[in-house]
Length: 624
Ligand code: PEP
Ligand code: MG
Image 1: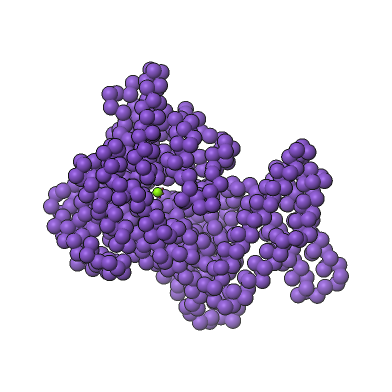
Image 2: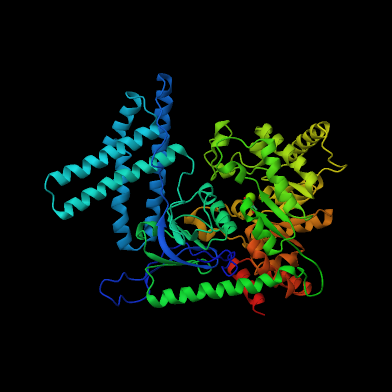
């Protein structure tokens, strides 16, 4: 029901990861549901009002295959892996229970125990194993068939024994639990998104325990008003996708999916990070007003589109857009972005069961470059990491089985192990670069050696592309690096000599500096991109880049926060790339600020050793 903008008012670094149940109003009618308010992490400010809808988690049919005798053993291993993954997920859920109110805990804990039992030496798993070994059925089909058989038997046994209403209800619930664990197993066996959003009522609020970035990429923002998720953090890739789609969302609302009922009204406030289930009439009316006010505010900001991003003293600042999905292109034009500062190419691989070839990639890059009408497009080569999954990549044995994927083969490291993927991508980008100004960006660089090895590949691919008759011009599109690890930040001097430009990625820089997983709800309160240690690294990289005369920009989520941008300008940064819909607010902040004020602010902030004090100073500055 509403569109909105990035968490401009959400204070960076201050997380509301706790889920608090606060009855906000007394239950006035005897049967009316009591309004209940939950807190989480606001991802995209803006208000959504709509009925709760759960994504259908398992397809009605999965592939049914007969296994060759030699395939039985590997299939059992796959089943075991899916069981272990499911158990880990349940363990994680259980660890979150402590955050919930006692009655919610009492409701959910026995359910989790029942699930865990079914994943132990249970009848369900014995029968699934039998179907794989004796009937030679593939694991997904065996699980679904067996879960359904068991569920029917459970329900029938109780009903035929003349159970009373309470027993019958409990039998039906147990049957549903068996089906649910079956769906979880299938989901983990397939390791691919297969949620179905298409059948959802238009204007619904999507509620899920967890959505992967690949799931989020399938959401149609014209149909889904808002999203509430039990898991997640402010800069994980699912959050970035939701922001890109412009959907008001609150993540990290522990236990919410267990409490919400399908069809119940819910208000999602992405600015404050609150979710109100069964809102009282007064709350509902206020939320509907807020939706209208919000739309008006957006319209007002829209008028800034044609005005330049200039400080009050006349100095220009470059405000570019990050692009996650091609569907965002119209938004980028509406926001008045000066090109694309970060095109995350993961979307090409994320929901695909085969590798996109050179021609297909070229077509997409060309369309994006053309749409920028002469402004530059910065294309980042594939940044594959732990939380994303692609059939296409696992099909060629691309994914490492790292225990700790964020510290494992991620980004450029992975591409250098599979140069064929990098070569195809380079060739496609180089071909498309004849369409307009283009830059090439490398993710997760930590050593000069990696950069040199990549440049060799880049130049070799360019020679090949030229030999095929493509006119690339004398200078190739600049090759730059993401600075998103402490190693890259502290080694910026050496890397900056080799790289043609630098883009500071504060999402990962904060994660690696603070040793806090950006996607983990349990530690989200510790994830502080404005921690002084992170700020000092940003200032250091900026100083080095300016000295080396290398173009430098910042493309982490903080670039879209108008509260933070004056500080970054005070450090010397003049180029920011952000979620397109954040551009008007950031532009407004830029136009109301002078460089002197920014420099004074930066000097003052850099003396601080406490994130809360940094936030206080930034807030005070914005209210001056
Ligand atoms: C970052 O790490 O700040 C960044 C922009 O890259 P991503 O969010 O895609 O990891
Ligand atoms: Mg990153």
